[in-house]
Image (cartoon, rainbow, N blue to C red):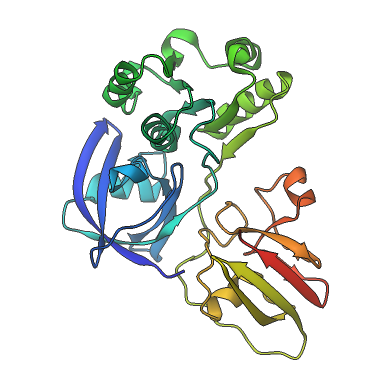
Length: 333
């Protein structure tokens, strides 16, 4: 999966510390994505040449456009650089849209919890569900104060357009203090049977997940972003070796078979062979490269995202998987 060049065609100030960037691909073409997915952008850096950071798409696929929303963070080089320097006409390298923080069906009733810039993928999901699906949505959105609310006008408009399908509840720290497990457990109770999506700072997500666990909610999706230490844009080179397993990979309806060197992760093998496998961080810290082992066994060198149930179902991270058995069959379907 090769990088794409995106041109900034619009910059919108959402709050004092958040901007939305509207992007188009060069050469001009439609970039396909699913609601809730993200882009990994290459940001210029005087110290390292560039850094890679992931930002959720706030646009929805049916809108036919690409937009990411970036919020300043304390000590966050990339977010501050984009907020200060992004202007119409500039270009940014990006990996294609990725991530599995997306509903399987837009006809499902959803419960969305966001804090701060965690609203970004939620807006994409909300717009998609309300326009393209039949499900009902409840959004609980936490911020420091009223001035920190990103997309306040957009959320008001969506609520007015879909009063029978959308409920938006704002949680302001300046008024209600920080959310706690007991308060959230009580607040979430009316929607405990819904599929839950949560995105925001780690302490907020931990509290939400604990409250959901108290309510017995078992369809919980958590979006985690980390600062990448490596360069996911770097070219892949692998060494041929006699010590290799055999891997069969099904992706986008096509099956390929390759030798898989035992000291090389699966993603590197696929990219080196020209297979457009999805990925983002290449560090085992996101879900973009997830695939499923249907035969054979692999070992994960690192795993920051997959839960025990995911592993039991055969899901693995291609960027961290090395072969254990002589033959392995993998599917991305």
